[in-house]
Image (cartoon, rainbow, N blue to C red; front, side):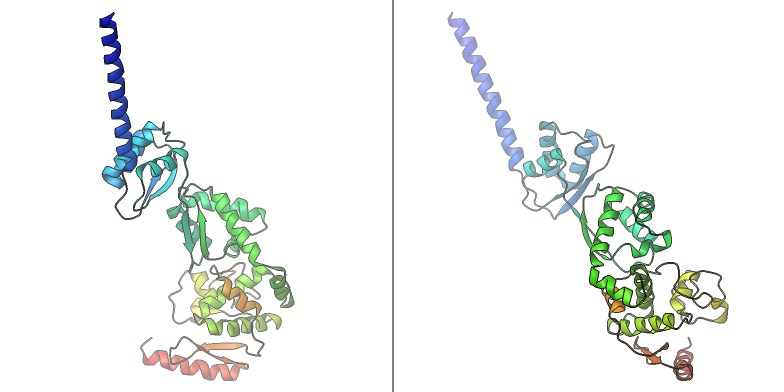
Length: 337
């Protein structure tokens, strides 16, 4: 009888000690805090439990090892944990491990601007999301194509800005979100303004893209836009040098010569009347507004100023334009250009 009691007491004591030890270890693991700089980790599709542990330890050191252990103790599943997470200074290991166990990702901020083609945008997206650029290109055919855009017009379906997504976001969701943002921009009043100019929203995006290539002076963009609107309304060729550069794939050209003007491309606005088939860059929302509110004037020609200030001299007749162009070419020659 006494022996049985001693065994029972010993067993209870052992259980209490072990429980206390486990609880103590758990508290130590949970209380660990991250002391480094903000660090984003990625758990891709197909990752194994070992890969999750290795990723946490490799990126977060001893703290990461504690997070990995807590993740395991909470029955972490690699498939469910797929995603991207950020360890912030002072974050407890339990907090991060729980987020990974639940698959509660930390959003990423996706910013793009100063891009000419949708292909460049797809490449940038492929470097920021789990999906690659090919997946974004394929999604564009579905999302934008269904919305009525041709591949040449994809650059008109998005607006440069900063967006927030999850790293694992489906490319179709990303592009649909951008398209919705673009559609929200095109309010009834903006559509009415475009219609009053005889333009569609895509037409406005095309003109805006040319304007941005012509000048980086925001206070001049409205005047440049009106010049091209004037040409369209008079059934004159746009004769926009940036469209020739786009056709040639060389935006570094300083002088457009006769050989350049002969390029056989629908983007060559010296050989083709009207607007090119799509934008030659992804235009900013502010430039779209500059087109819609372009100040009325009678200019039909423009030429870079010879002071290389980035501004342009405008002319309503060709003779005045020839004088302006001659001054500019003399300035180029003086610089050996």
